[in-house]
Image (cartoon, rainbow, N blue to C red; front, side, top):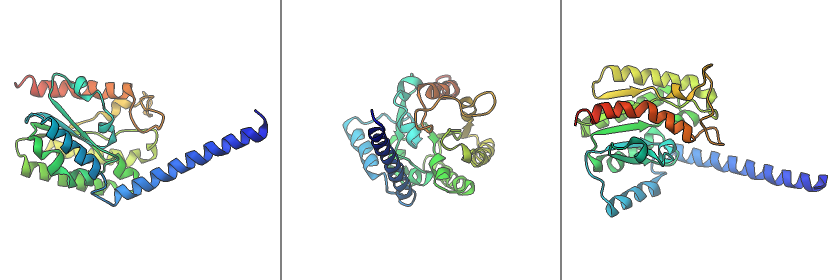
Length: 235
């Protein structure tokens, strides 16, 4: 391949990369400012429920794309009954907005929530996210007072490593909330994704943001024994 052709190919690749980054940036900004942004995904959940209604009393996993991409969740958590309701690049504000559609219909025994990375990554403050989490907690306690809440800690990803101090601030606050409420459990799964020297481990796909199979295995190893102890031992 001559230099002119090589330069042309490199230019095309660079243009595609920049276009993708610009498009993703616009997508994230639009989602940040529109609570109804993921309506099509929520409607898809409702359609699936009409086709095959889930049994009440399951454990609902709700949150952003890290839950959406956890394709092996049901088998990873077996024999626990699981409903996976992760969507788009959700913020906590999107989960709040869709609460009555992605949680209430299932009357779950427990809700596992993982959300917040997109909030911090889009420029929302730690205090804003903590406040939105408290709104979610209040809503769950009001509408489903017998439902347990499990909060998965923030994720130390390579792509958002510069935001890790803010994420730790959120984790600290949510952990303190859980200590004061018997219905809430804070699960520090983030530490399992770090190396011994405290850096993000090789548990992410190419984007440095979403977990690979090993990352989900580590999440499972942390969370599943806790859920089994609570809901299988009690049954």
